[in-house]
Length: 231
Image 1: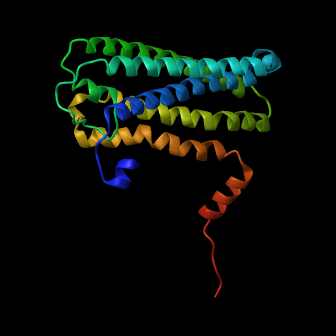
Image 2 (image 1 turned 135 degrees about the vertical axis):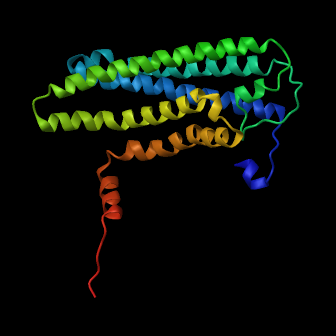
Image 3 (image 1 turned 30 degrees about the vertical axis):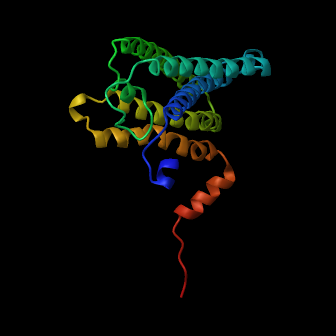
């Protein structure tokens, strides 16, 4: 936003480090919290009688604190490791924000392998969360399909679908950004994809979570339903 308003493309070394830290911190925290929310859906639908025991206020506070603390440590390690490398290949980033792969391209030290190791560890951790989410939703859908009443199934699905939509949007954009084949990679495509996963999910999250609000549903229905006026 600052770059757009002041028509500049420069950022200080400290500002770049801060930007990278907060980006890693918030994106990690969101992913961990989405995993915890999936566990909440799983317990509420598959083990409703144990919900108060497994997900009391203290347990929720501990899980939230663990998510934020893990995200903080993850961001701190990546930021400290990335900016401890000597940068000798210029100061031009091929991205509109400070991103680890773009900063590593400026490094002239073999120590960047440490950061690659950290990235592999983070990817494995993210993959573990993804497997947990998929396994939980398999159990959830199996439990929902066994509910005899249509109203009960609809209520259960309406509880899960906003969260599932956010997870799908978040994971699909991230995977497309980082796992696309090099043959289709280009600077303009990389910029577009970065906007896709860094801007689109946070922008759509409030709308997706608000779809359970009846007043918002009624307002959207009025907007999308064509109206006719008599002469």
